[in-house]
Length: 339
Image (cartoon, rainbow, N blue to C red; front, top):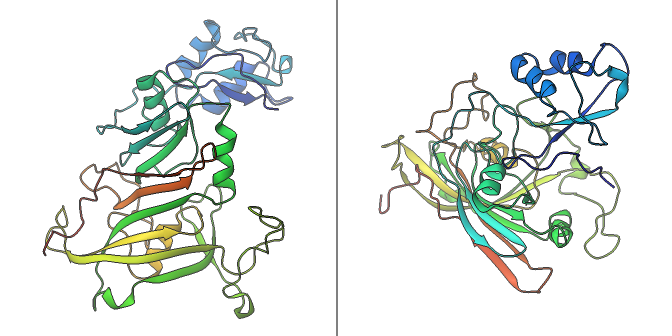
């Protein structure tokens, strides 16, 4: 059972738990400054002085508390001078169990790094007054579209099982630069490969596998809705790709030939759709990672990644009714109608 934090949700943000090492520093404050002092040293010291850092039993951890006094401490993360992301998040649906929202490009799903208040989760908690709101899945910060959240801890597990058993279906849309020779004759198609993502590395990598494993995925089901525990062989990522249309961009790439595609992921590997389209010579417009990793640059709000989580659907585990939610957003670089 997970340990309950000694601090409540504040301004939409959960207290963060930090593991304290056994040795190496005299005080817990000294260790925290070593880890995070480059971000906001004055703010960190102030939190210790004002009792905002707590031990598991709720007691305040001060600037003089020895390192060995506690195994864990809790504190509120904050980012000094957090820059606002100038796009709204829209609630598509809300009931006693779920909130479904349309996340804009550039807004992360959950707090992390330089984004805390400027995340979908924290914005919605504050907007709706729902401190127990929890995301059921995540979208990359660069990707826009439908995200589903749980509002009810008592029914959360029933919806989590749908994701674990791959009983959720999703549809994405993307706009890619149209390669020489066009693309219409290639679709529809199913693309498979083997890939993984190493922590700390920006891009995913593709892996080779032998011809005898081509087309093989996870082992046979052990019982309905469950996967075998045997290791994956062959391809572990699969996407069905359909062509919606081709034409001329209606956005900042005006005049350029583009392909508008619909994607049905069978699996959910990190950056899967971006990797699969890039491998087909259809790298998504404004993608700084694929097919070529570009140098880090400030966000360009006029050129968002042209990837949209358009629709999510499932059979409701509480009622047995089919449910489907679709984004109201549209990709700016999609072909001009009639072009």
